[in-house]
Length: 196
Image 1 (tube, rainbow, N blue to C red):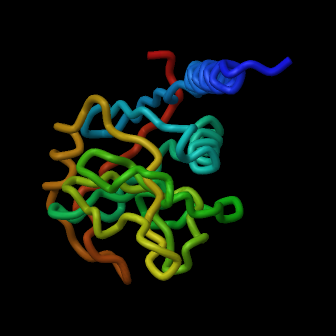
Image 2: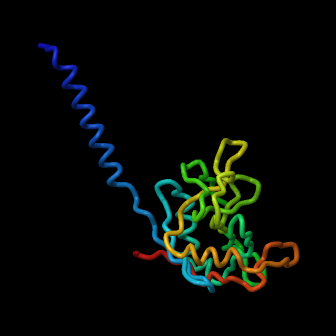
Image 3: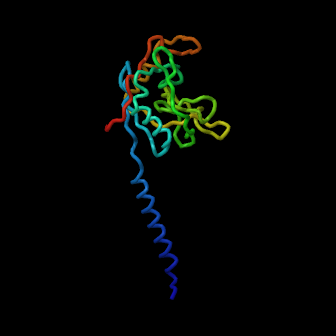
């Protein structure tokens, strides 16, 4: 026998179950990955967001864990834009990389001051190992649509933004075909995943 209260009870049950599932899924959300970047100008601590950029975070962590970044440099420094590194040795030799990854720029994260994003060529899915840290808000680099695919933010600086600012204001020069190269190399000594 069907009563007048049955649809309402069913609706309430569905809402309660849905709320429980949503609460449970947020509880299962991956914690940010903590990273320590040691540079010749000081330490930079980062947190990376695997929930929003899973492929990009995994790629970065694999390069870092394998020691790829050790001894590379910040090779492109533009004081009103960003500092870019992770692909060249101090003598401006490009390091060989793995295959490019997908562009995860459409993930809700914005290229704001202090965020870290993947550098790439004009082709949207050309990012490999190089990254940049935004030294100012660069929302023009955010995903807009398929014609303006943006640059994938995958984390942010949690400590050491003063070091980032010190790097952004170093004197730069031209080296061969490369402009905006620090006159004195800024070395990325190592990048490691840490517990805190």
